[in-house]
Length: 525
Image (cartoon, rainbow, N blue to C red; front, side, top):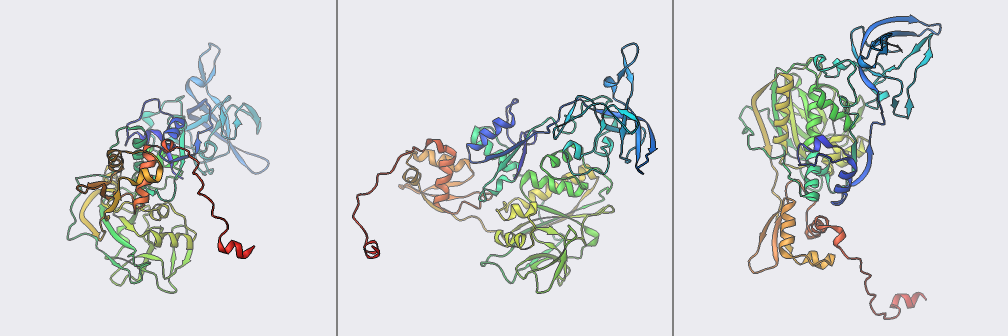
């Protein structure tokens, strides 16, 4: 379920300076988003920046080689005869991915790591190890246990680090993260955009929608073309009704992911992979639109979206060869669409993934039909982050906005140049108006809502409400990000939810007068 980091949320909605995870959970539960858990690092300091002054490799009798390190930890160094912290700490470390001069994360005696695992000076391998040099797994930041954290390889600029500096705020380990439970009908809350909107509904805070932009380039004739050839739609619904492609050239493949971005990915439960992949994941978490980045040099125009044929196979990014079903929607390329690039809305293939040598990137932002994606994800046991969102419903107006955001970030952090090739296949249909009685909320909930209160509440969630003259019936058009609002019952639920479930009285209904046994009951007896 989604993890909500408070500083990230605050970029989209006004939050009080003293807001904490517990209060955020209390605010969100009012609008139906229940708390699943509050994740804290479980770490208490001292956890500081250290510089490796010396490193001596010492072979052991068991065949293992350990490093006896002298680590400068600034004001946390051992005191000299004059009482000044000048004597470096001696620390034993078994990892070998660092050298003298590196800036590392040192946890010192008195600290507690997740577990809990208290740290103390202890004798090991013939030395007294006065602390510990940490890996990602030991800090709860990921599963990487192959080597310790070298801060300059994690996106930190050495000029911004000070020996002895507290590492907790640098790595986001001082921030609590709220995990929420999202019901299947509210897929828009699988994004910071959606949760910020709900927080605004709950508290009245000012919300700025990052999904609305007016500076998007128009589609061009030279865009990287896409064709949809869905000859076997499920329930008569075409598998893909929107597909946007953008091109970015000259991206530096060695450009690191900025630390603030990788930190947010880690807080969301994702690991940093490469700049291009991290940007697509970050924008997905922020806006709710899944995206994919291709190595442009490996593609042949046009991209073709089609159903699989009997016997087709695909090796997905997880390295598994999968036998495809005729119901699977595929991303393919070439005029005949013969080469399979990926499972649409679920996972890409290995042939066209962004690699360490990729400089030119094609960005995909598409909108896929919910049932198709849900069936494919379950058939192949691939509950990917993209599939989780598509099967619940994604805003069909988001693809060009999300693609532009990816382009902007690739230019800013990867040094790329946006190509003038802009393609937007748009076969989406606007939501139809729902005939809605302003009396239904009171009739079904037992609360005397006023007509204006009902209208204002529906407009607050983004609906367009058009009154019909001399009538209590209104036309309601749901916003593009709410595919779950399909009838009057869902609109009544929204009124009850936002005005407050606590306003609904608990009244025991009066049992109707009995009429004896029914004919079937008498026959059975």
